[in-house]
Length: 120
Image (cartoon, rainbow, N blue to C red; front, side, top):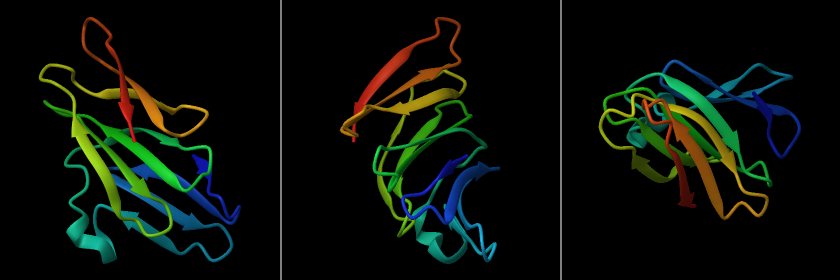
């Protein structure tokens, strides 16, 4: 769980969703469903979440035969980019943005424990 850039909203995953919740009103917005149904988010449970240094962009990673990684905007809930890991990687186990926010790193649950680097 992370605080967003406005310090009023918290960002967290639940099931196959990325959620931004206002801590004062408890109103929630969803990446992957809800108001933004065209988002076509994750198809399996989200295991890990990372927030860039500005706290405006979020990256989430899921379980699955070809686990998906989605970068999305915490204000608009719109998907910025998406990618999938290869077969037999099982899940995205961790995610982290670089200090400048231009790249993010992830690891998987493959038997070989691979580490990846992606540009945002």
